Length: 331
Image 1 (cartoon, helix red, strand yellow):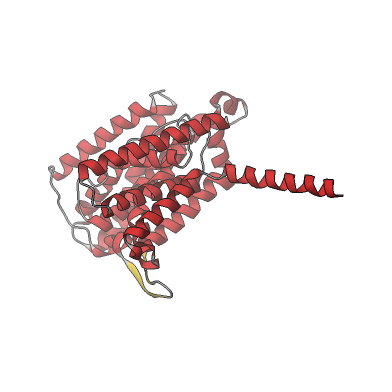
Image 2 (tube, helix red, strand yellow; image 1 turned 90 degrees about the vertical axis):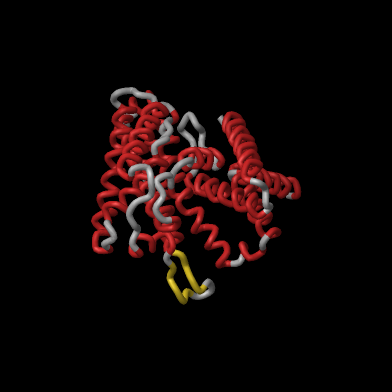
């Protein structure tokens, strides 16, 4: 009997250790970063301070979710930063200082994003252009269009009913007093993409396409369609992120610059494999929050910007290298 109990205990320990090994390291990294922030400024760990951190991180977290769809199908989307910038520019010019224009302009912006994502997907799927080249071309095309549209300088004005998504608050909320609209958008979009990625056939088919396109095709999956849908979802999240960023920071022709690389880094930090076929949506979103927490901590430490950039780069390279090494061992 004692021997049987010992075997049961060993089996339980093995199951617990197996479950712990399956947990993405990014959650531990995020906890350590939050503790570091708390030691520098305890206000950040209070409900209001943490909500402010989430509000600032919301554009990157949403963008990373969309980027993950493309990464797991075996590609990259470098155009999302330019889609964000064009969203801010287009909103300021099309609204034309009239709040009544806000809602139809938002629909137009989503239309522009969907068209950009569709073009990326078609180029990659049917014309066999590598995603790196196709989306780099789209990045340059959208950036040039935005600069031509604005003349290279901020123009127009974002109305209050547009900016409320990025800087608005619900007042008199129990426990936290004020709750940011941006965090609510993050919760809704995050819940939706997690459901699509982990609980629907669409997400499973995208993973299958990235893992082995030939086997996926033989299994009856429309590989081209899945890749096109992935790019469209990425573009849609870029528009949402652009709306939040414009609401938070106002009109800036370069609002989205650099976000594409941050989103890819965040997804890989969350355990996504760059060659496709493996990824976790909650972990990727946590990776984006960890990046924002890292940037916040370095600011609180008062590091000069050049040194901050160097530290950020080294940490990201190390974390991505570890994630790649870990994924190879898992395979």
